[in-house]
Length: 158
Image (cartoon, rainbow, N blue to C red; front, side):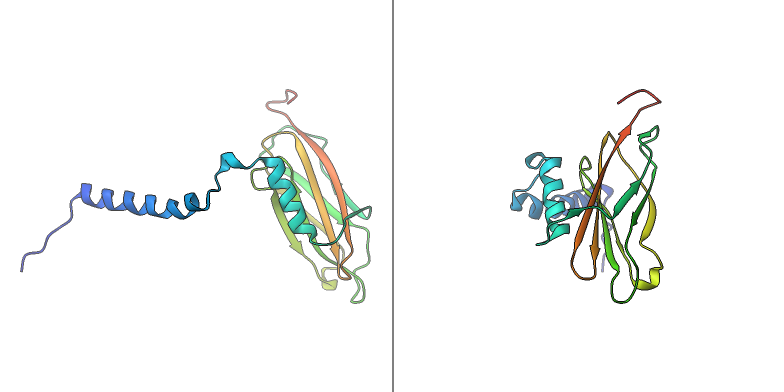
C-alpha cells in the first residue's frame, strides 16, 4: 500500500477553502461592518443593556481623566452611591463606549458580599468619546452616567 503525502500547496489550498467557508455564514446574514455605524451599534448596545427600564441620572459616578495622553490604557473607576445589603444592592454595572466598534466595554456583576458598589478597570479608547455606565439595582431600577474622555496623540489635542 502506497502512502501519499500531501504537498504544501495542497495543505494551503485546503486551509484557504476552510477560511472562505467560515466567512460564508456572516456574508449570508448580510451584515458587514460597512453597513452599521458606531452610533447605531452604541444605541443597540444601550438598548440591550437597559432592557425595558428607563435609565435615570444620578447615583453613578465615573472617575476618569478628562484628557488621556495614551488611549491604550485609560484608568477608570465606576462607583454607585447605594447600599449593598441583601434587601437592596447594585446587581450589575455595564460600561459602554460610544466610539468603539464594539460598544460594550465591560460588565461587572455584584452581590451584597461585594461590600461596596465600586469597580476599577482600564479601557482602550482610540479617539475622544463618551463612556457610559449603567447601574442596575436588584429591584430593576437603572441609573446612568456619562463622561467624555478626550484622547490625545503624543500630548496634542485630538
